[in-house]
Image (cartoon, rainbow, N blue to C red; front, top):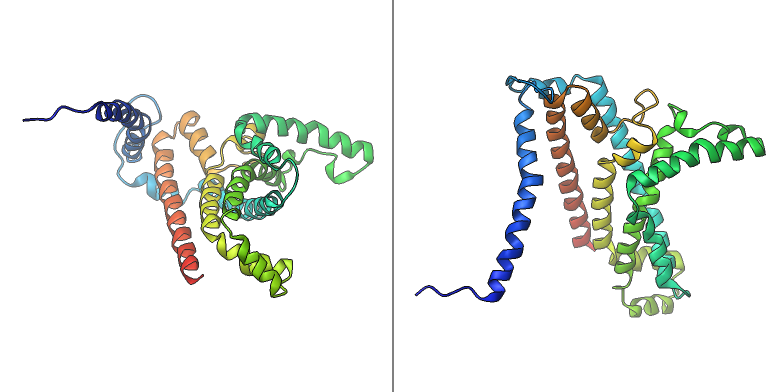
Length: 291
């Protein structure tokens, strides 16, 4: 005889099935359709024809695509280093015995709660009006003009916003990692006469490597996929100097009649992110084994 489902099993399926359907509808299905469109000359509207691998071949000769990849990799590399250094420093400070420690942790997490577009528009006003006003008032020439208007330095303005927002999550993760370090090892290092730097380099860092791995992967992925900051601060300008891959895919795919071509770009970008993530995990796992 077939046994009837228990209330627990019914509840499980009642929760799981809608979630799976929603995930498939809004994630898996669009991804599959995008992969299909990458083999077409679809403009985002009207009819289209299958063009095979032409879009993928054209990607490697398109100078604008190449420029966006270079900007995105530069942004992600510098941003990942800064985010992890700053968040680890703040985590070390917040992990010490200081007053109002819990409140300060909550304050540091605020930037991550706010939307990227909201933060971007706030900083856009700050870079465009506040900083130049201060520069004019104090007669400091190098900040009298908005950094976002400089083809050479606009990426730094975008980087400041991206790092400021990303530090929040990484700080919380590092704090969690530091709390797993036993006090005994610090007492032993003090007895051995270790300096603060030696204590950090020889004791703290090796024990939080698993959390460093998590933060490296998360920060690199998020910074590679930068979009909100570009949209609200520079819109890829000036002269396409801050055009990220995600923004290029959105802009030319939706507005530029290159839906099929940019779908191919999105597919390549997906595999690039997966490849970088796998490489990071492989290298960091080997480091963890050595330690």
